[in-house]
Length: 114
Length: 114
View 1 (cartoon, rainbow over the protein chains, first blue to last red):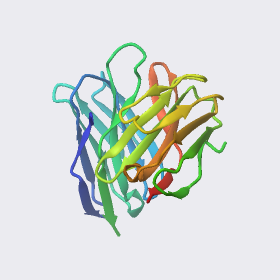
View 2 (cartoon, each protein chain N blue to C red):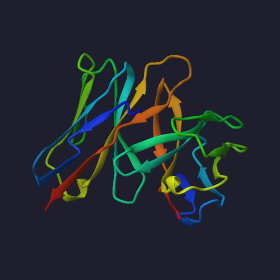
View 3 (cartoon, chains in turn cyan, brown):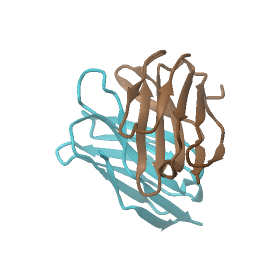
């Protein structure tokens, strides 16, 4: 079953606007990651936030994590047409042992209109 | 570095035929993964490997087999293809550093089973 669930499923904005995507998950995690997938391509890692971190920045990306609500958000500021892609959150469950698998959500399709 | 490569890029099979998908990585990563991506389902883990000579089942392993005879290669086999296996298959590799892991994805293989 899916651990992470992104919201909304699709988002359409104008170039220059900010885009916010949310991810909710069910179980305790070690870390949460965001990936981007351009149409017809593989996923590319964007940013990782540990369970003991609340906010992280990377360029125009800002990720927040609220472990009490089991949720994360990805903010892309000053969006560009090139940001058009699907965005996935992935969680690494805190299951102990050597079970390090990532569980991916279903993704948010972001369209940035020029 | 080529990163993660997958062959073939696209394949059409008839029900009951067999085939092998090849994933190769040149980053000396220990961990490798096979996922399938279906519309509205996100990525689902089929099988994974934590090192040469080891394999383990993921979320949806039925109908697939894998082998990791060499560290750089991870093969996914379909012994008797079914229409339900029509999907886009992604391979990924990773390593753990300071308890953290991010995955590097290949470009995908589109498989159509008629």
